[in-house]
Image (cartoon, rainbow, N blue to C red; front, top):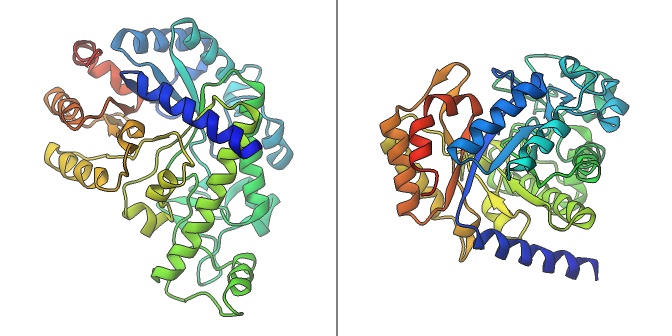
Length: 363
């Protein structure tokens, strides 16, 4: 009965999303931005979003083993209830309140996902407290890729922890949606050689050890399948709390995402494990953007285009990526392909494209 109820509510939610003409989203970070530092800053940011036509804000809630809201779940592992700079406040609550006043929906973006730390060789506080949660490579070392260190995304205790974080927000806040990204659900494909995962693999493969080649296709598929199963569980448990909560995912592009981070997002769509998919089509030239978007659209099944809103890069740290002409052509190309919106990374870039976005706010 529960599964029928979730399926029915998911269909109603999908029809509701399809009926809306646009999803104009933006990611709001706690890095290279001071928006979350005060309610006044939040009000100013939300006003700009309203002015340029943004109707969905994806706000960071989990970053570098800390939250942007008071979290008993995080504190139970790290001893840290909220990121220090936000102590005594609840930026998530403030953002939801100010956004809803202006008709803008807010999604809790669990940015770091299964990544435990950034530029910390020991994995930071989480791995110090829970060393058996570490993702390990073939040499028995903590998995680190692009300066991010990782928990074992296949370990049930790690999965329980992340799901508890998500459910804490869904339960305690008037949130419109929750989001994973290129780190949720994800794990570098160099991982999976920790004792727990090795034994799990052996139990399902006649006591055979995993391939030593981490790029072995069968080994990739098995681990990616475990993360897909995790997402299915996350989706169901969120819907059991609040059926109308939108579950969105913003993975890397396919098939690179699967080969490098075990993210098989076409399967996520096929199995109905997310309501919206926002692949990060981050490219520095218009031609590269068009070519990459074309390839991503090839992986969509019937009806999936209604759930597909590409992620568009407009700023990295202090560097603005496209010029106005390029961003305008990206928006036009998205609409020409029947896409009803996009999500921009990240908020600070809106200031550089205000006039352009106002012109296209209803397109």
